[in-house]
Image (cartoon, rainbow, N blue to C red):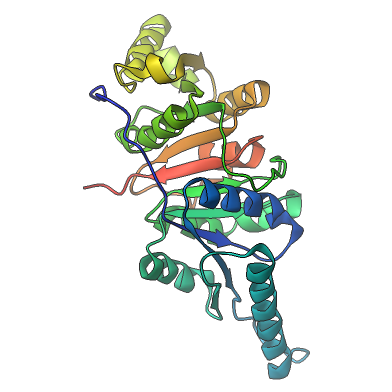
Length: 292
């Protein structure tokens, strides 16, 4: 990877806020409104009322009532918070509605969240989360169960954590981390974890030295003039080390890069992405490399 000459400024014009109207979305709503205000972006509240399987105890009228109530809740939410974009509602499953919303409205940031163990199970472990991470053509800001609600007065980050496996997709994601760090004059920590398998098979000190050089190579030459960069290399389980570091240092934002064909199905619950999002004390921005 070649060192960047300078940090590219990132901006968002159209933000999509996914909601199921539960209390678990309050923190995500705060961040969605904060990002939209900070970047003067249009904010679209969105809800997909997935069809339910009708059985002997569920009538067609009952389903129609569920749909009508959901429409009313979304409209009320938009009215109460004065969203700049129109509410987006679909009776189709989110897997069908989500790509259409992104394409039709030029969405460049998706915000979604969950609180509590059950909510975490439902959103982060289900096919909905996997679909969003796999198919979103723009970054996704996930507000996990340990993130406190913040006021809707714009987004401010004094500390940003960028954990990376140093794969090719790191370059796409680090652009966002650098942009946030530059506009906030924030502390930026670039982190890599050498796995135990690597450490056992190769010279540990050499692996650490190589990782430090690679992380330094992600920083523009003038980075120290506008942020406070820090390089951290640990040895251990990547998910646990990143989670422990975030718990101790309490960053305001974590930025994660995802490869273009990230496979979630078999190991989503045990992977780094899931563990970081589910334990982070701050929002996690996932940036998928769309390839070339």
